[in-house]
Image 1: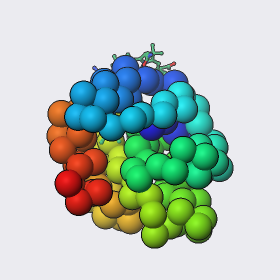
Image 2: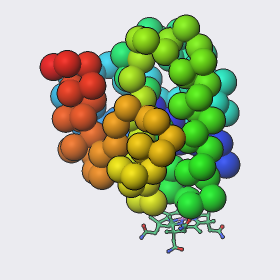
Image 3: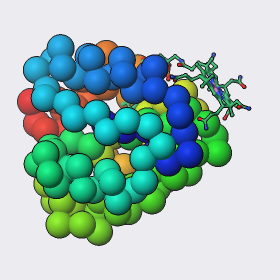
Length: 119
Ligand code: B12
């Protein structure tokens, strides 16, 4: 889980991390203002099943597309699912940037993560 490049908001991300941990996931929190390549490196290193991206600004949510593309271009593409969220993010935006899932809050983020890994 990380917050996209240019974005320093982390309260929502932290709540999502907590809910994921509560649901039994082992969470690697890579912090705020994270470059796309860092998401890929952290996902490879931790053998992530799901990569979560958070953005709170309309100006930074567009950076989510670069993360999705970097993950799809890596050899993680058929392994890690990408979920996105944050106040300005919508299902339509998720579809547009071809992320695997969107959830509006931390509780549904945990449900979404389970759904993405088929549990
Ligand atoms: C707290 C806050 C800050 C704090 C952040 C502190 C921190 N450690 O996070 C500080 C003061 C640093 C800050 C700075 C700025 N902020 Co600010 N901030 C907020 C504020 C008040 C609350 C955001 C928040 O934490 N909400 C609570 C959390 C729980 O909600 P959430 O993040 O949406 O997360 C939930 C869901 O979205 C979802 N979720 C979140 N992430 C993910 C990820 C995944 C994968 C999934 C599935 C779900 C998910 O689950 C979460 C829990 O339910 C909002 C206004 C508001 N009322 O929302 C403005 C707001 C987001 N900020 C705004 C702005 C403009 C800024 C600044 C640019 C201000 C400035 N001129 O400097 C800077 C930007 C700095 C930067 N580069 O990031 C604007 C954004 C406008 C826009 N449309 O883009 C807002 C909306 C305020 C406003 N009305 O103008 N901000």
